Amino acid sequence: MDSLKVHVPEVLIVEENEQLSQDLRDQFTAKGYRVRVAHTGPAAIATAVTYRHHAMIVDLDLLDMDGLELLSYLKEIDSQFMPIVLMNQPDAGVKHKLIATGAFACLVKPCNTRELDALVSWVIKVRMLSSNRQEELLMA
Image 1 (cartoon, rainbow, N blue to C red):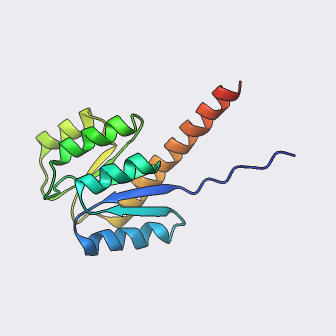
Image 2 (cartoon, helix red, strand yellow):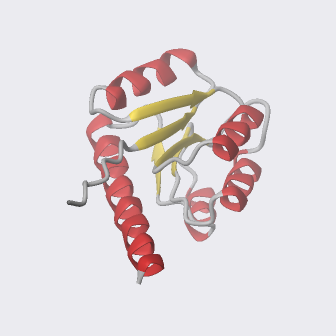
């Protein structure tokens, strides 16, 4: 009898603000997700290289690294990633550039936690379905 694979959704939060990152960690851990937090660009890259994440929440306004540069590195590591980007200021030009480069959504801080939760849930579902479909194709 085949056993069902159980996948625990994994979320990477890239946010330099320790209180916000802890609040987000608590929010998504309570949903049963495995959550990792990186407070710097280099830490985010190292974590993304080491672990596969279903969803990534990325602060565009890190002090140590340009957010667009970080997203480019993360895209090289995982070409299928669909980041949810957090911004300090609304900027339509930057938002359009982010969407064009593969961001799934852009939210201005402080963001609505329900909206963020819904976006993360959606990205996880899409990534898990895509992953399951790839496994099916490899076994065919």
